[in-house]
Amino acid sequence: MYGNKIFISYSSYKIGEAKVVREFFNNNDFEVIMDKDEKESFIHFMDRINECKYVIMILNNSFFESAYCMYEVIKCFLKHKKIFPIYMNELEIEDIEKRRVYYEKIIEQKSRMNILSKDKKKFDNALESFDKFDDIVNRLLAIVKYPEKEKTIVNACNEIYFRIKKKAAKNRIVENEFEIRSRYLPGIEKITDSYSDFIFFLGDIMRCSSFVTSLYPEDVPGEKEWKYKSHQVERSSLGYIILVNAIGMDGEEEIIQFTNVSEIEFNNSDLGSDYLKYYVVEKDINSQREYARQMKRPENIRDKDLIEKYLRYSKRRHRVKMNFKDGNALDNMAFG
Image (tube, rainbow, N blue to C red):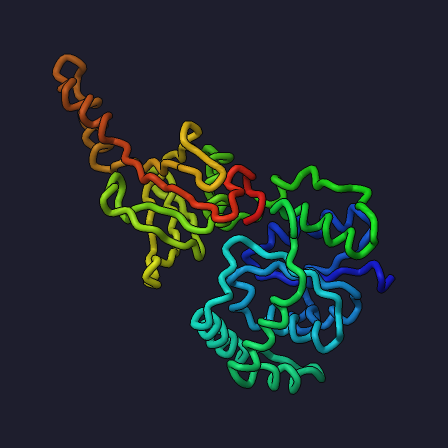
């Protein structure tokens, strides 16, 4: 039924949030389109917007870098669809220079898109200049933002449902929201130990407005403020490698590498509505080797002072303070 069909437009980095939105509206008797069939082309899938009266767009920085997402925006405007934008915390679209960077990335991607639909000419015309792209962005940003009140993804869904149906949703929560979102955190499939600690750390660093840490562990004077862009997780011989692609306040991009991470500690003694603190604990491989070498010696000739020293320095910590400009730090993974 056309009036009960919703299309979800999102960048792949927000698939966890998109899955929660789908779960909410499926539970409230909507048919939701968000995943293409295995044999279906991306363009054919995106053209299924025609089947839907409503389109929910999950807006973050990578959304505005994506030619595919922009195709869906233009398609919605051409077909006069009712758009409901959900704004993510990290979205930075007001700065004109950032928009230029996004536009350049879109144009580069667009050259590789195989658009055969009748909308190709309109799509090309809509993006033929930066000024036209800028107009599209401004038009999208002029639409009512969701959520208007409490900043959670489910609250945004409730507000959108009320706007469509003029009444409260029958099922107002998504009981397995945390499980759904954590399942799609990038790199989480590589982690088998201290699972929940990693989920909270990765979920929080993705949703914070900025974070403060140093490139090297226990280097407090070297701490800088960064904005999160993306991350990867890999296994290492002593734990995990977490690579955070971040942008400094000076605009310089840097990869912050947490190496041989054995655990992540949440500092629950110092927290507020606008910040959280974590400690990323790294194993020092040299201290680990020296400790192992001492422990292989007969007990009566072990150097106890060295063993104590190796144990003391076998772990090093990165302090990571995450800032939340909207004061929603304590809403775990509420609005990433």
